[in-house]
Each structure stands twice: as structure tokens, then as C-alpha cells.
Length: 271
Image (cartoon, rainbow, N blue to C red; front, side, top):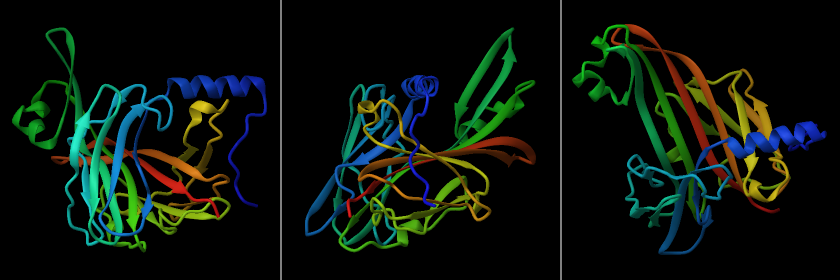
């Protein structure tokens, strides 16, 4: 039996869903096209953190950590970067045939401690953690985070080189190619955590333009022992996949909490 996108079945449940949707801030990147053909092609990518999917109404995405990799695995320049109040935008020239990976995110640390009767909070990378001697603060609590926001665009025939994983945090290892998804056909994705199957984590999948629906019609899945999920998108359109996981990590010989998150935007084409 194929999974289906959930329908609200009671007034109370519907009200709860709408309230939750209205208060949630979701990060995303959305390319102007997911699949293209021909020569001298470009895509424009929007990035935002919003209450409604693909409708910028909260905060523009920070473009400092945006990276693009071409079908050969080599970096590609993100051009014409600009940020407004609610939306950021940049262009990518598709000069080679194949699949491009467009990402934002990275790894960092958060810390909190008491100083002079006040609660201090800090956020930064490994270099500033060391240079500012954050670990030496009395009673300091340090935690880590690894976040990724991604989308994939293909010119011509799909390729797989850009799906090479780094082995840190949550990562996508597609079984179904992200640019080969069709409404009404089963899709299989695998998620990895620190290079190993991310078993037993919850995954949310929501079709975009939820602003114009009375409910999210979202699908909540749990990865199996191999970190795999299977689902069937019922309608064509752009979709948003999100998951996160709490785990343990090491920092200078000490065990710390590490939170990893992964967000992925893809398109289901009509058959």
C-alpha cells in the first residue's frame, strides 16, 4: 500500500495544523528550473526563511555559505548575489551537462555560561571557539551543529558525481535521482548520519504553496534500518523535505551534544 499525503480528519486537528504551519519558520532554496536542456542555460535560485513554503515572508537567507558544484564535482561560481528583506537570490550558469548541487550551511558551535550574574551566549565556528578561549569559560556548556540546505539542478541527462558524501552530519544519498521524480511514482531516498545509515529519524515532506491550502497535507515518515524512506508524491510540483537528529560528538576529547539538520527541495514532474 503506497503512503499518501495526509488529510486533516477533524476540526481540532485542522486548527492545530494551521497554527503550527503559521508559526513555523522554514529555510529553503528554490531554483527557477530543476531540469533543463540546450546550451547556455542559467537558473536563478531564491533563498529564504519563511512561514509558508516558497513564499518569502520572514527573512532572507544568508548567502555567505552558498556553494555550487558542477557535474564534474568542481566548484561553480554563484553569480549576481543579492539579498533583500525577505528573499535572497543568485544565478548559476550551467555550462556542462549533468547534475549540479546547490548548497548552503556548514558546521558550527554554540556555547552558554554565567558571567557577572548574567547568562552569556555565543555562536561561531571552530576557529573562533579556540581564538576566543570559549571552552575556558567557567561552567561553559558547548554544543555543536551541522546544517545543510540543498537542491539539485540537471542540464540534459542526470549524473551522480555530486552525490558524493562527506561523512559529517545528515546527508542525502539518493536512490531515486532528485531530478527524476514523477507524481504517482514511488521515490526512494537514503539519509546518512556521519556517513552511516540514519536509522529511525523522522522526515517531513510537504508540497509547496501551502499558503493556498487549508492544511499542509504533509507526509511524516521514519527512516528504516538502512536510513531509507519510500513515498509517492501524489501531485506535481515543488516539494520540501526536512529532517534533524540529535547525537553525540567529540570536541577536544570531551563529549558534546551535536544537532544535525538537513533540508532538501525537489520537484515532482507530471507523468
